[in-house]
Figure: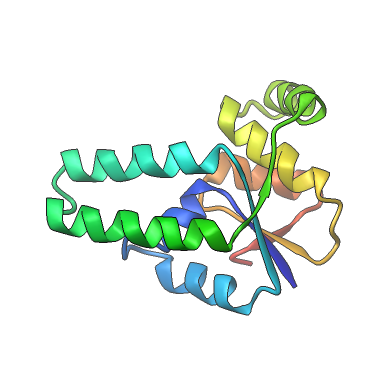
Length: 139
């Protein structure tokens, strides 16, 4: 089984919160884990937000950023090309998605992998992915 992690799923690998155990199980059981290049700045922004909200200390943030870098190097990265950008626009329009959510969905669809588990905790993105027939994680 292969997995695609969008940012809400990847973030659960960095900060212990509801769903973190499920995200880790998926990560560890997947033969291949992919993500879109845009996940990196999204994850860094989410970590910075967590620090500003004092969910993590400065010391914890340094350690978590190191963990992010380690996990990032383990991913197979999907690049956003013209085809994915165009598909993202269509998906955003049809499924009423935010821009980056549509990009994640377009990347998952572009992989054309029947064994792929699309990992997200975002409700709108999850519903759109289900409508497109993607296998979801968590199930």
